[in-house]
Length: 356
View 1 (cartoon, rainbow, N blue to C red):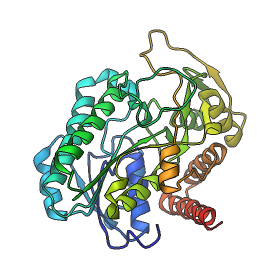
View 2: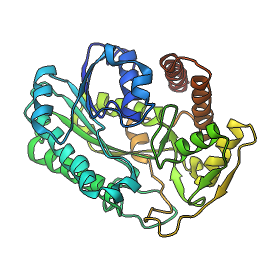
View 3: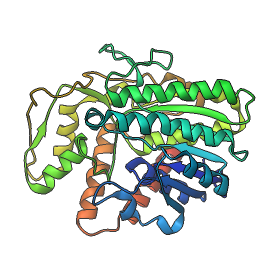
View 4: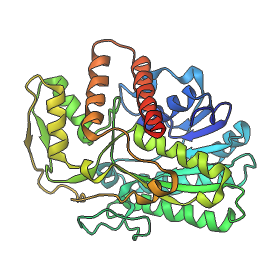
């Protein structure tokens, strides 16, 4: 990874979001020329502002539903690599605003691909989707990339549609290999600086900061939790590898090993143990709550076999890193400095792992 991104022109849609902010800083630290296109951050506080990276990149506030604006930017910055992260990412919000969710997640993907189609500089494109794209059978083994796409709720289904749009464009317009096109279906991510509503770790942090008991809607729900740096490392690996070998383009699951596919109860137990201060949780079911999958797990054999990728941080370490980041910022430390430190520590462990 070291050296490859130096001087590369990279466009990130959704750069002001949680994952987009981490990815922007990760690429800046590796010498990339980063341009971002996204809505303004929708929480206060938000990680993008805390990192203060606006002056180190070309940050454009815009909406992926606006094809003209996105095309004008791409024609101007002439990216060589495009990471499409812009999305409405919350399941429960998709029930409240299904039209907006489909417009962003489906048409936004279509717009990104159409801009790539007419931009001669692009060599590699990665569409970031989700583990929830699969038809959920509530079975005990992980979904593979060739399993049926049929997300249940508006968010999950819109991401399934985004996968189909990407595949359609890959066959229709990029069969010549001019641009390598892949999708990455990532599991649930955690990490410092996530302030979203209706996500379990941000909910835990808010309860801890308020000195309240953590309320859990569904303690038995099982998800493939991982630190945000795990999929970001995989995204860079995919984009870099397919740049020079179009045969590597395709769909890839990105998730933890089976031992770290955890119930919500186990995740929150790890959080309360790491946070300390007598934190506790209780089950508090919501009547008439919208449907959410009970069991989700990914089979990541393909990305492991293709690229030699594997998770670096176990779930407990990911939770500890999240708590450490949060408490450091609460104590007045610089979010930029703390995030860079965690990135460097993670990359050092990745390098050591592959050196063995």
